[in-house]
Length: 451
Ligand code: HEC
Ligand code: HEC
Image (tube, rainbow, N blue to C red; front, side, top):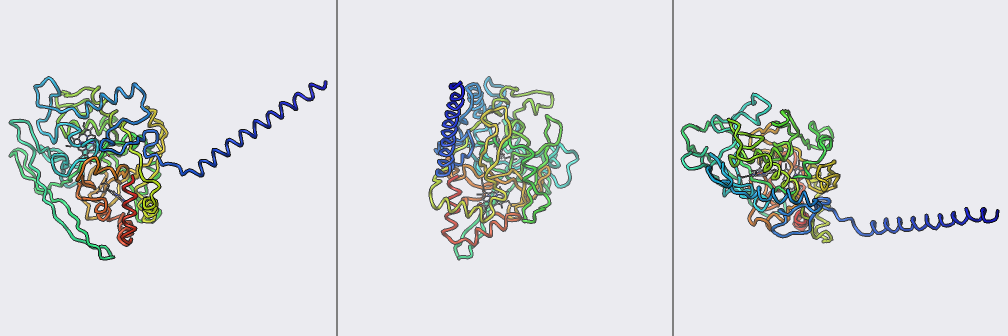
């Protein structure tokens, strides 16, 4: 009798000790989290700790061994140099093309230069396209892109030459600056491809490709919530979703990739790059007789490759200038478009599933004013709209490619020039930057360089 009354008491005592111990551990974990600032992981699990010139081209940490194998095959496809048929290795280039490999334009998986064959000119004619499948009205015998190179015996679409104009400016504190912008000059090469006088042109510099897998997995619902097409909150900023054509789904889809969010997903972007930039027909865009220069496997591996690159971690998080700059970035309302924190939904690639990450974009279109306008609509994007650029990796741009430019056409020679070009919906943010004193401007740039 006695033992039975003591026994439950004893186990109760152990239960109490156990509970107390558990609570103590929980408190100590919470305390340690409160005391050490949480490190923002740019790419969630896929964050890598390398800020060398190779940092845009490394596989995402967290891939399974099988995924690593596909990634490596994709790496080979990304850098494969295509040549004219007939050839045993990588035939099919052209007949007209812009360059001969993905890696030739996305240098070290980063951006390209405005010149040197990496940038390209998209074209169309003014007016509403006849079908939702078209980004604009195609130029007869050319289409939507000037292929300025060609295989032997075939004339290119046109010759492209850029001339740079400069324009001086001044901060309210008297500091002078100079901006530059390109003028596109097209000259006809082929009498069968006359260039109409009213052709609309858009010069596009290749953006970096790392982190694209995370951007692809942001749920559509999140993008819809972030968009504010009618500026219902009255802050002068109305992010819009581009509505583009998905040829495989045979339907209109949300645009995410490309400088006007003109492509719905990475499989489409990759297949379109093959056919438009290199003249390589493929399962999504076969030739007129159904021919395909590359098959399903190469397309899948290359798509997987751009989905599964790692995102470089931020640096100098404890530096007082970086911390002050981050506050100024928020105070100037840069964060209205360059959204710092987003979350992916579930993904077939485990490392991309439910990740909290920091791209500094919401993939939406914004009217950036007359200064940046190309006056060429692209699906639902108008001639003044551009997709908010992701800012992750911004501080590594010059490490990966010295003298690389900024903005859609590479006109800005520095991050500072890129900010000064902001107009339209971003005019108020640009003004906030202009009126900062020199030290504050340096702090804001220090923050951007830490990304
Ligand atoms: C001639 C240069 C060139 C070649 C070759 C090229 N690209 Fe691109 N790439 C670009 C340009 C320019 C853009 C922006 C396109 C736009 O805005 O319409 C781009 C955009 C992209 C994007 C979207 C990135 C983003 O942030 O939205 C991805 C991904 C991409 N390219 C992957 C590839 C792959 C894969 C290949 C090879 C199959 C390839 N590219 C070949 C120039 C090139
Ligand atoms: C209304 C939305 C909006 C606001 C506000 C905004 N930006 Fe942007 N930002 C964009 C868009 C859109 C682009 C791409 C423009 C282009 O390519 O022509 C861009 C491009 C950039 C780039 C160039 C990135 C690259 O990869 O070349 C930088 C740097 C930048 N923004 C910094 C800032 C800073 C700093 C602020 C605040 C002072 C700011 N932005 C405010 C929309 C915005």
